[in-house]
Image 1 (cartoon, rainbow, N blue to C red):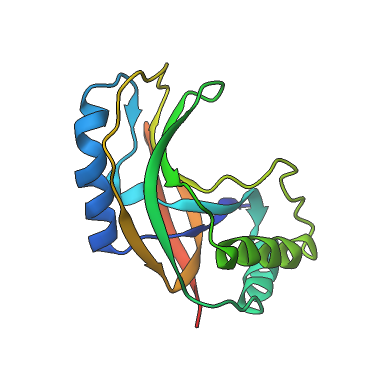
Image 2: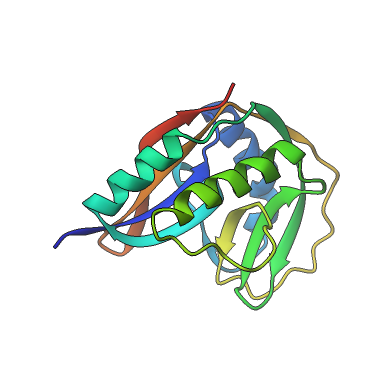
Length: 173
């Protein structure tokens, strides 16, 4: 039986994506690791993993029932998860609308057999993997991102690389 590797995410617009790349590029240039391709930049809401089409369809139906308001994120910080060796861009403050969306979507997916992550939610955009550490001094920056939808994404292995493909959109109002 065919399965798909899925997750739900916030997916930046082309202009927001370009601002992320332009802001982070000078720092990434000085680091060693595997840079995430600009087309794959996102903030994960829930990582589902491998599911068959029947579960995917149930999750799609559940996600369609999640309502939320559009909101603005302020991407304004960098960080490093040392254990996972991930260099990331994130938020100094998480808007309540994002917390609400994360929780409501998690509740809806739980009805489909999904087990929510037990660690606190730390929204971020992974910029680089296998990054051993950073001792760079980062300048102040702010990238406003108006979030008006969340998406279901399929992770597709393409030879040695992974590509993310948005397969469903869920509007926020």
